[in-house]
Amino acid sequence: MQPNTNGHHDGDGVQPSYEIPGGLIRGEVRRGDGTAIGEATITVIDPSGRQAARSVAHPDGTFVVQASGGGHYVLVVSADGFEPSALTITVGNSPVDVDVVLSSMAALSGTVTTSATGETVAKATVAVADHTGQITATAVTDADGRWEVAGLADGMYTVIVTAPGCDPVAETVTLSGTASATVDVVLRTAAELVGVITDGNTGTDGAPVAHSQVALLNDSGEMAASALTDETGRYLFANLAPGDYTVIANGYAPVAATIDVEAGRVATHEFVLGARGQA
Image (tube, rainbow, N blue to C red; front, side):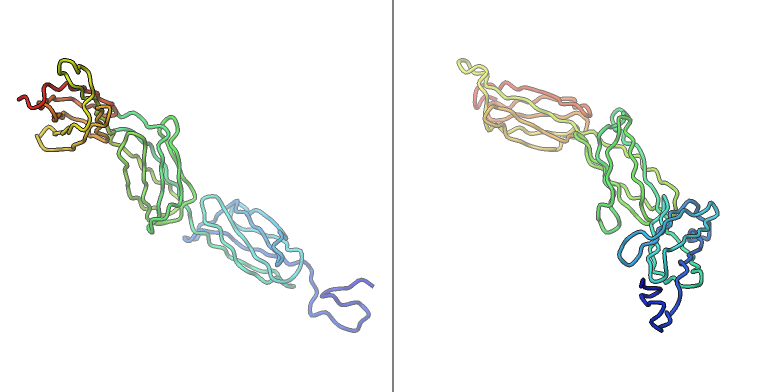
């Protein structure tokens, strides 16, 4: 004999606690301000974790879904641009009425350009951090310098943009509602100044001068940086802002030269030092 409702047989003299007609779940999906959310996906999960039913809300936000039987279920409601909601419901003989409120999720987008030329920056990395500093989304700019991240909850975020040859930039933005926010970032292009110092003495013409100190002065005459040449006589100043710099090479007779460093460029200047100790 096949079992009936709740596992009891028709002839065992035990009446089931209730009959299961197949539970009906109905309700409405809306925003926090009461506005209806149409086309939301309604999924019913049974106690074993399997999908018991699925439906889509009408344009006015209302929905009806039929569970496979009575008992406890998890109702999951999701919609584009909103944080999904999950709640436990108990289905019996009578229809279950549920009102679901979804929290909005917004998107961030923008473009990345350079301060020197205004050109867009492709393949720049964009990281979005929440108020705790946790990275919640990342993106890479396309060939037109555009980027976008979606599915962000309301709150304050920090947008961090990095690209080779540029100084990193961080900007703060606050999201509220489903409206997208635009963050256009301008990167300051860093430049490099490189060169080689050689010895101009007779008999050693062109020999590299290792461990020679090279000083870099900005256009105000202030020390901006200093470096030592390597074993090949090479020196390097990286991440420079555009402008005029004076480079002074020591080790033999000091030699100074003024160099115009352009944004995003690698400037090269080679020094030939005279006899050691000459003025």
